[in-house]
Image: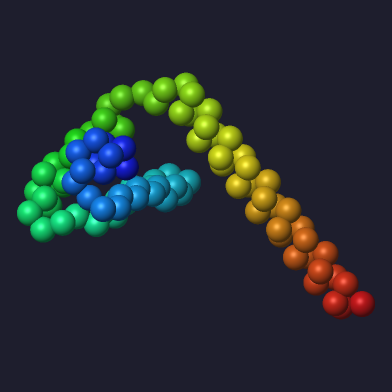
Length: 93
């Protein structure tokens, strides 16, 4: 989204897309800082990018990067949780 909306077309100062995933559903959100006069074109491009997500396969390299990112974040979250629990045990005794 960033590459298409900001880098290639120069339609926004900032663009950020995020996903919320649940067990059986989820959603995408996109934030864009768009100058006056470019809103309509930017919205068309953003919706076009959403359509690409729905109809196109993700490249293997991009999928691997996404999986690695999820794995890394999970490991860090587990380590933080373990460290926090260890700290709490020390405080009790």
